[in-house]
Length: 234
Image (spheres, helix red, strand yellow):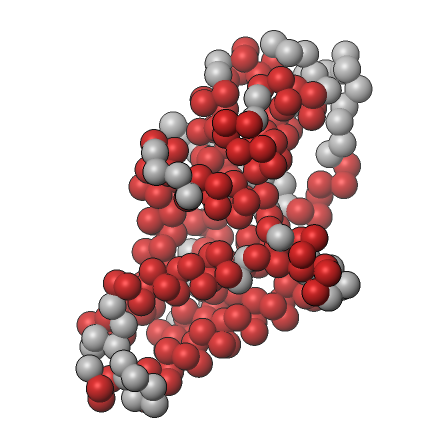
């Protein structure tokens, strides 16, 4: 299934309210954005095509005509939300002589800034990641694994030197993709901890840099042999 155009940035969503019934049918982007909200809120089993139609305020036949089934709609949403992500993450820093850990740091920041644009994506992936099945297989093989390989590319020297291993990469993935994105996906809890908006541009920048600095500092400590597992203790 080919990827569809990437979703609109978070800042453009204000005008994306429910269109009055009887107006021009919703665009593909509008349908997929509404479906993402419904799947992220209700999960695949709890979601329905009717709920997406209600979200859009359109004819009950529209989505069936365009996608055929709830399952086909889910796969279209999965391709849509990842459609531009790899392209954005492939943007390298202007300097090409950065050390590997600096490049990794820049990748973490790009990833977290991107996730802040689409907090529903984090919730949708969290639901699917807890259940073994074809949707998780599709997400992992088609989208998540390529993204992991891209983000982890700068860490290859650490793996070759046995400073890090595959288990460590898994730990780093969850620290970044689940732990560090929690303020975006768990917004009510995050705003109870601090009333400022975690999705405000300045807050996202500060959060992404704090996370990246903390993770890179931990890896640098391993390189220096400061903590157990460092290079001189392998």
